[in-house]
Image 1 (cartoon, rainbow, N blue to C red):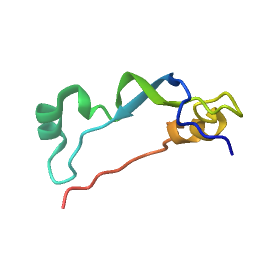
Image 2: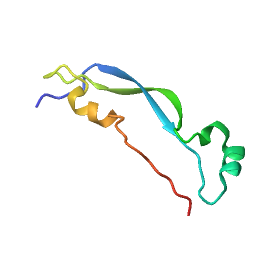
Image 3: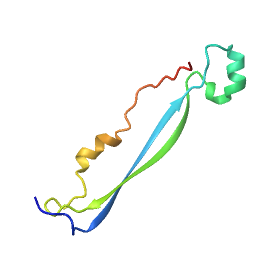
Length: 90
């Protein structure tokens, strides 16, 4: 393995765009109170937002591969795949 001690440093940025929705609702309160407190975030079909995420890695360029990191390995790390998250207050 070649030394990377004197290799130039590179920055690599990937940009991701995704949408996510949520619904704020408490089963401990009547529908009217949920609507008053949470407003449009209480929509039974969800309330969504669009997000932009930038992930930057920096490091020496590997003299053998010419890469900072293998992007095929990094892609699942930022794989924004999420089904449903339910948070229940305790």
